[in-house]
Structure formats: structure tokens, C-alpha cells
Amino acid sequence: MNIKELATLSGSERVRLALGLDEDQAQKIRFIASSMAEKNPHINKARLGKASPGTSFYDFKNHRLGIGHKSSDVLAHELGHAASLGNASDFYKELLRGSKKATRISNMVATPAAAFIAANPKLTSAQKNKLLEAGTLISAAIAAPNLYEELAASTIATKHSPTKLRTAFGMIPGLISHSMNDLTAPSTYYLVKKTLGEIE
Image 1 (cartoon, rainbow, N blue to C red):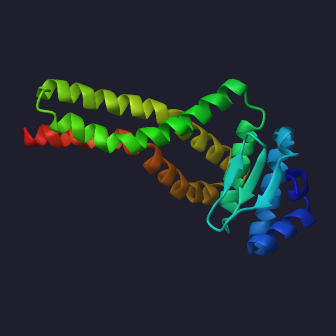
Image 2 (cartoon, rainbow, N blue to C red):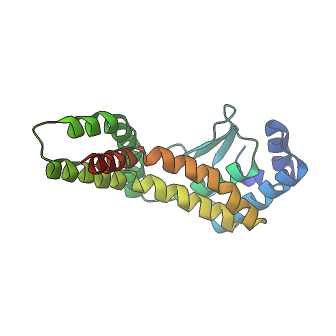
Image 3 (cartoon, rainbow, N blue to C red):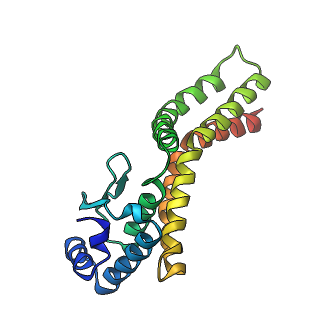
């Protein structure tokens, strides 16, 4: 199935049955898909399939969506990604792809790196503060494209929703989850810096 089909009664009904949604959610999905496709015709051919329970994504390399959440708001968010990234420049896609990889690495090394800096007897307090501050800023800059894209997708989803306020509130848990993950490294460096300052 593609997004053009999702915007039809039969298409939204297929998704409703596949995901176990109610009639109101199916109607909302149909409305959002139709509204987004009208403003962003490049998403019409994006493929839509069922993903593992609790997992939803937009694969911008292959222009396809996988939906595993029983939520019309989650589907709307992934459609927002399709609208945002479906015809984005290669530069932006590569920037986002690089940011995702670099953020994963940054999150993995943050704790040992911050601990090494904090416990290194060869560094002065001022040097430790500068290094931890640099770690905070650099890791935040690495994560920034991810956070921007998540916010953009949520904004697009809300804009095209027939229940804008409810959808906006529905986006909050996802944004918090993404922010907590993407900002793991900056938070680690910052908290270690704060802790050192209080100890000293």
C-alpha cells in the first residue's frame, strides 16, 4: 500500500484492521494522509507497511514507512517525516544520516569520556571545566539535526490534523523520548561539570 491509497476509504480501513484502530482514528488518518498528499504530492508513492509492535519509522533511503503503534498520531508523525524528507536535498539527508550515527557514538562514549576527564589528576579544575563544556556543546551540535527533524515532522503532522490540539499533545511523549535519547551525551557532560563544581 502507498500513501495515495491510505487517503482513500478502503486504504484507511485496511490500516485500521491491520493496526486494530477504531473508526475515529481511521477517519483521522485518512484526513491527514489526504491533506498531506495534497500539499506534498511527493509522498503519494511512499510505501506503507506494518512494523513490529511498538516500532514505527520512516526509511528515507527507500521512501517507505513502517507502523507498529496503535496510534493515529504516531502514523501522522511518520507521515510528517515523509513530507519533510521525501524530496529533501541529498545534503540534508546525508547530514541527518551522519547526525544519527554520530549521536549513537557520542552517547556511548560520553560516560567514560566524562569520567576520565573528571578523574584525571593531571588536569586542573579549569581544564576539566573547559573540556566538559566543550563535550556538552559538541555533542549537542551533533544531535541538533535529529532534534530539528523530529520537531519538523511533529509540526507537519499537527498542521494537517483535524484535531490539532489533541495531536500536538500526542506528539509530546515522542519528542521527549527523542530528546532524552539524543541529548544523553550533552546531559552527561553537563551534569559531571555541575557535580565537579559543587564538590570543589
